[in-house]
Length: 312
Image (cartoon, rainbow, N blue to C red):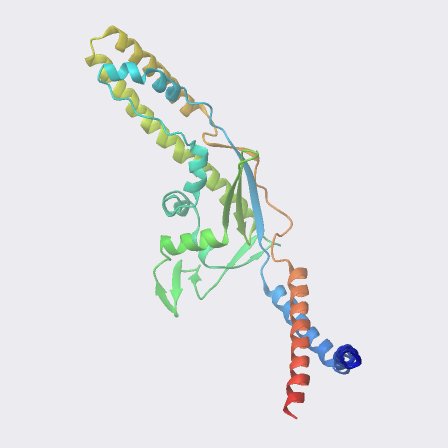
């Protein structure tokens, strides 16, 4: 019994000695730890200073779509039209707004709607932006602005492909999200130039609106043509009345498509030329570097002390 108590006291005593030993080791190596941490801090600060400022143009969007009258009419008259041998299209349940958020992030939208309307070096060859005179500096190893040529390995090459450009655009510049609870959408563009960030945000907004305006206009025009054909070839007066109602509503839909300024999205909060950068967070980078340096210094001190101690 007495022996067990002595063993427990001995273990507690050894534990206390180990803790004091660690503290003494840290005190003895304090200058090394401070120097090592300071070294990492300097590296972090230096690295953060070399990072270019990035500005974010953010727009909050809301759906500008009203209820689709032709869709309601198709549902109401589909049974009667079926009896007459007329096959009416089934309208999709998903709104253009939800589909547009996905469309914005596709290669086809970038290639057909964004790429033709931007200056590609602003995306693929930008080195820095001068805030004093609002001028852009391009990487001479990638693009020669004087001769308007692309460079690779000191020789003239072709411009970056749409797929390569889209990859950079999607990973570094554009971000879209949907807030289901509020029914809003966020469109964000990041760039070294706050003016280009806003310009591209406006461009994406305008192009996605025009894309769905043209798409729905084309579908409605085809529907009007189809209904006109059906009303001219059908002899049943009841069915003709149904088709006439559908034709009237489809014509109204075409008028709405042409008249609406913002077809798919409207601005709840438009993008702006931001004065404050969004990235990088230099203070956070510096603090993280210092913490990393401190942890590494602790690890090195413990390894040096206990590793060499076990050898002897």
